[in-house]
Image 1 (cartoon, rainbow, N blue to C red):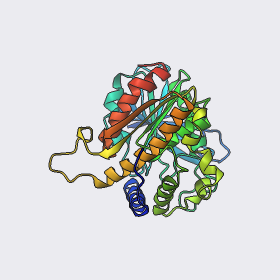
Image 2: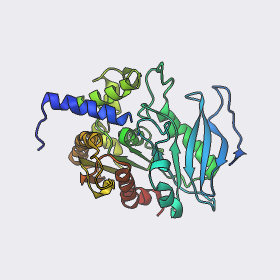
Image 3: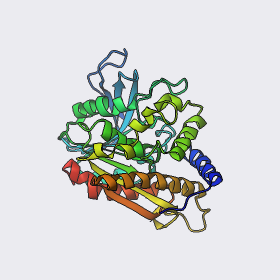
Length: 331
């Protein structure tokens, strides 16, 4: 059993979480429509960066805009399963994301999978918001990720029909929620140091503070704290709907360790340590719910890790070999 924190300590942790999470050559034309809101979803262009890396632009009717997606793919072509990698709090809109801050490009070079990392979705929790936000506009990311993007990727690259989704930090819990909301789309889901229990009061406070810190209204997402919307999108309350999905979940107690690759003599990442401790509590709630319901999952609760990119990359590698690759029918 964990010791109960004092109210003041909890508030300090919420503040630390909110502050930390706010700081994550030629074009080939494709058929599609880049204009009207009633146009069908689809790829409207591919910008090839290298033989195995591209940017796929997809028109989203639900959000009435074009979404750019970083793609890692086989140079040989041919159908492959798809893995959607979600970015952190700012959605890689600030240039901080999987392809820029980790070694995933090299890792997936010899893997038979199409990796897709959408650019955008800051503070969105990659869900469909109940109300459009004055700052963020229309957030319909669940619709985009589960309906619009898969069709565009399949058309552009081919597919075996198997798909997985994984997220880190802000997007960890939403990755699991996407698999709950769209079980016909995703065969596997993974959360790396995320919060899969958002309706927990402390988690709700942290999430609301983070969204509000970006001058956005957190109640436009799932309604007021404690409302049904928060419960509907809480993986810890809907674990039974993950039965049959390959699930990986991981977090750390927040202690820095070799996995973080922190340079000797550097100041410890106190903000990251506080965030990781918070999401570890949140992840533990989800893991306890999995075990009570006897829903199979790969669980990696770690002693060390301070919410760093090296930690996220290590979690992804572990998830790939234990959970994602087998579920996607690849290696």
